[in-house]
Image (cartoon, rainbow, N blue to C red; front, top):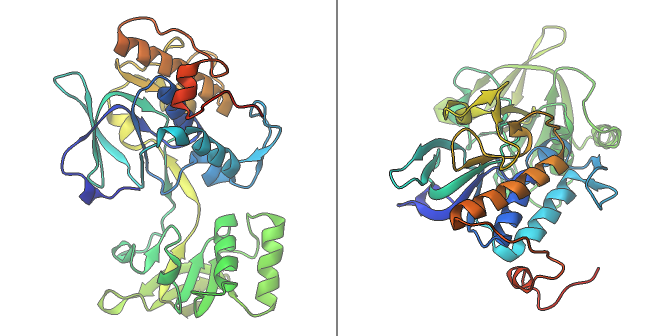
Length: 356
């Protein structure tokens, strides 16, 4: 993962891939087979996109040749597949600007200072960048990344702290369970706050949470946050209004708000690309957008007969990679098969064809 300070000048590459979900990761594989360099950018702090964020542990049954896998297993498998190409990943970077340069290339800039200069752009942003659902309390955002977190911080940040978690989905309950049962870096206390005594989480997770609650290893408060105390910029307490309208004050050192994510198309909507119902219009030959050199695959695109399936994204990524390879070569690209091509074996780091 990269940080803004690493970039004083643009990184040059053949392709900038926006999105590290299934379509983006498979795009990287196909581009690698065409000997095209690439960099992958994603606003999330981890790879996997929608399958990992929304159903990391839930089964997926329609991946060809894979009877069943979870969203996380799919992402892990795709990363293993592109490993021979040493994929450069820039996670936690949201692309804010995209500009065509005089030489025809594209300059991409992120909110953290990363700049890429690419011959082409592959947009595989799914339904958009997943942004956390924020807790709307005036002045609270000033505490973000120090006392307020929308994603789980490193373990040492919470060790010995009085931690309050807000949320009622799997991520919130799983985090409460993890913190309450840690052998090292355990918080001094763990309290979950949710608006009702009913959760949107897997039954096994809820059962485990209630078991730890009974054992006194964590606490649960039904209510909603109404305010906070932060003398000298340091979080000290969270004010809760319970279901009966009574106020409560929770001593709090660290606040984790895990209320899920909201997909937002974000700056992509301002790039003057043809769109239909917040999706990028593409052709079905190249999966190119209305702007030459910018391609789109996966849930972010639309065309007649479009089906929002992971396997459709794989198909779109494949044809886009072939189309770009031919555009850059200025000639048709011969079709080669991974079963027999010595070139592709070399690119994949194989000395001879591998058998299952």
